[in-house]
Length: 417
Image 1 (tube, rainbow, N blue to C red):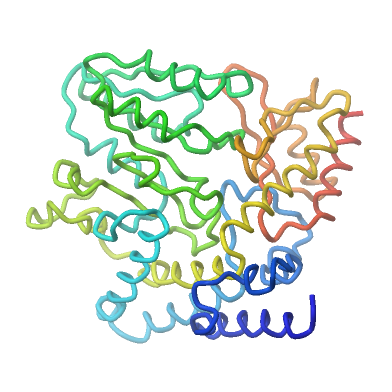
Image 2: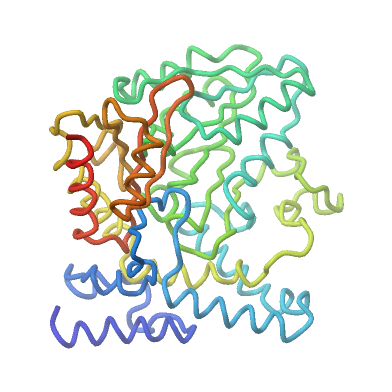
């Protein structure tokens, strides 16, 4: 990186650390664009304290961590909130909250009036799964690749209200996009009201054909709820392209926003019929704010979403996505042909991004997880399907170095032998 480019980059980071916006002349352009594509990922990496931890973090799928600039801004916000009556701080910050929603709405191709801040994807999904009016024998479709917690919500309504759960069985390493769409189509009956659909699966990082499934579902009069826990600020997409009715994501994963921040989208025409998890004033029935009435919470964390969005602008999402895919390909290409190593992810660019999973044949995922942590100082995630052999998920982030990945590859080679 040339000296003048480096200075510009560091100036931007220092401005972020001071809580300011990007340099006005640079507004709307990523650092990657400003530097003619010469983005230095080592400079980005140095902004994350976790990058210097003795144990390498390969579990961003569970949660990301904040860069220094976002941490500093959050600390200032917390100080402000504790130096005045907290609800006066919330009133003071309302315009900034609105601007943050407007920026996210622009990214996702929707309106800010269709968005609510929640604490995580699970809370967002449950507002819809528990709040959608359903009667006995109405059907909700899910699949074996969905995250367990929204399935628990469906199971509760099955037990309490007599609705029916229909579970589609997918084989992500074998099924084509067309076969996946057909599997959901074949599950629809005249009693189907909703499809719970995962954009990027939490076990393998597999990207499903959301738009095609939504088109098919709507053609059959069925609504769609998208679990986008791993999507936002990870892979380029918009809700408007999906055409879904409901969407929930976590902002503390791939945006690296403060922990306990998430987002719920409900199409404007659907807002009135969804009962919020925490009941609110009926005069707010047509307003997304009804999903935010959960009592006192850390309002400062919601304000910390804005600085995280500013940090994303440094790289731009396109460059970030390409880099995350390159990190995944680097280690998977080195281990895919090793004896006793089996990948559980399709690593092509249209099927996955940062996340990939592997299994060492003949060894339990739990044993390998512990060995990697203690012997190799690598933190991964053990996962799998009920009744099947488990495997390990690797989810690097923009704070991951190629040296980190070399350590992972060495550990897999040693363990598989």
